[in-house]
Image (cartoon, rainbow, N blue to C red; front, side, top):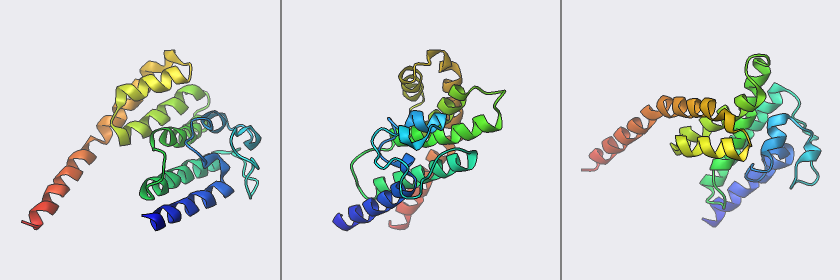
Length: 179
């Protein structure tokens, strides 16, 4: 377990050195990711621009941040490290929501695209559509965004519901092989 945690920690640090927006849980980095602020606005990182001077200033770089955050979450969970995946998933969703806003700037407001994508990513994994909706709406100070966030949460819940039945079915088949 120690080697697994060490291996996971090394990869998280390497990713964080090159893409500093992916460090920590994401709850304090959420605003910087959602608004594409400069890396100097990151609250817990020093030096803020990381080793490569990475700045999130385009949709491509928002995609890189989102994917790197998902990889970091995977290493955190697989390594058995402290922390969870709820706020990090929301932070990755904020990066992907920023891409959606860049594609449809006149159609979907920034707050709605970021919050809906964050909710969708979180609900796909945690299966908590109502709690995610309320947490995102009230922590962001956007209670008027509850209807679109709830719709995104429910769409994510229904779109990924087959995964639960598929996984459960495959578990039973796996167990049947041993009997």
